[in-house]
Image (cartoon, rainbow, N blue to C red; front, side):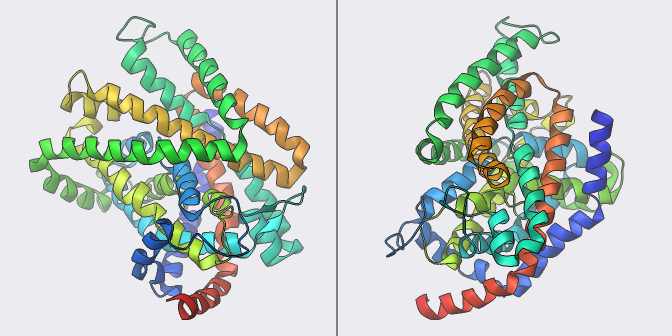
Length: 450
């Protein structure tokens, strides 16, 4: 199974996918005439609530809530364990390509979120929804429906909680269970299973409240954990400040020198960086459009500005903090993998404290990501099969929490990475085909509001 998944990932994440995501993002940068970059201050004004009182606006979330739900889906172990995986597989240079993906991702998210509001459609129960599948159906027409189905299939499986739960259980095992003798380092199936069942019960209770409870949890937890993680990493970097310049030089030099990458090829460095960048900020993947499509607004461009702020936070800030922490402490040169690499970095800097602080933050960030992903997957299952199947998907999703707890990290990463490719193809194609609609709407918005 692992060999099959590796083959599928290598095929789906080759040069064509890099061109689609990075080339498509570069096209949006030029096509928008740098609009989302030039108007970041306006985006902050919208997020702060200045434009929340729109008359006749439809939707379930404020601009801030939509951003937080979207960020809760991206700010998680993809920004911690995902960065460690990127460095392990692609060397320090992979971080440079993650940055590039995020910079272009600002424009990509501006387009995808604008379209998510512009082409909202009714689900089978008559409720207004947003997301790539509705953009394709409402914006491109029925002949493009296979693209919508492809996105939904990718999201149903790509949004499963496997990676988040797998790495959450790993950090609980390494920080608590093994040191306190609750399980052996080489025989931990029982511990993983028990923790998986506990997480199953906790998350089941939250998701029964649907989007309202998910939003309530995310808006309280995500900002607090991001600020806490940011403070902790800044403190670590301040204690290793003399290594920061050489670390940036290492990242830049390695970006074009593939010797530290698995396989020793420049293409490997680029592909790993783009993969992990997409895994981190989801620009061009389309899942975050499901959250932004639920925003209470009549102005598509307004929500586009809100969404463009996402890659700045989750990749350019949080992922950079993680990468620098792992590199300046030398954690990337140890035998640790995934979240264990980050644990090593913080524990060596803050002995007897760092691993526990990181564990708390990972717990809340991973749970918030799982909750957002459940919402994404359930909306796609409803689109394909109707409300009755959505209830079945909820149970299937929750059971996969236990599977993620006891599964192999390699199998989990490759499975999710392949599903992300299935989502990226329809999302980017539909966004490119409808990009002119966003540009026309942006001109009108600037004329009317700025």
